[in-house]
Amino acid sequence: MTTHPTLEDALAKADLLHSREVLFAAIARMGAEIGREAGSRPLFLTLMQGGLMFAGHLAFAIPVDCEFDYVHATRYRGGTTGNDLRWIKAPVVSMKGRDILLVDDILDEGKTLAAVRDWCVEQGAARVRIAVLVIKRHDRGVPGLQADYHGVDVPDRYVFGFGMDYYEQGRNLPRIYAI
Image (cartoon, rainbow, N blue to C red; front, top):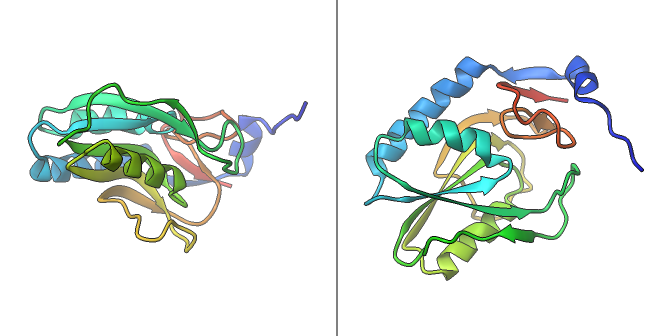
């Protein structure tokens, strides 16, 4: 059995990148932007598990009525590097003709987000917009994939907190750290 470092060990060597105040201000700004551009009752589709913390805060910041569902698709399964995409739960709400707001914690390479976005389009979505709390700045992303709304940028380092995990630890930290 592989043992992973503890969250306490990670925090001891981590750098704080974004405080709670910075993140909440970014979420408020994003919610206002989404509200101005929202179509008729968009489908707010959270990508689990990482997107959960951010999505809850973002939902309260959007000033228009949304319908809610979630999708659980993962490449990480507790690790720090991605594997093949595994679908755990597909949304039950119909995508046909809908304006979809796909919500996730981070846009890193974007393989999972691209796969879910493409699936929404295949299901007949009229438009799919992507909202992420964090964009990791590097040049390894899926070509042509970009977030329509994002909160903060982070450097090309391992980040955790506010939904992003460190070996399934620290998702509920109200700040973003990097090691």
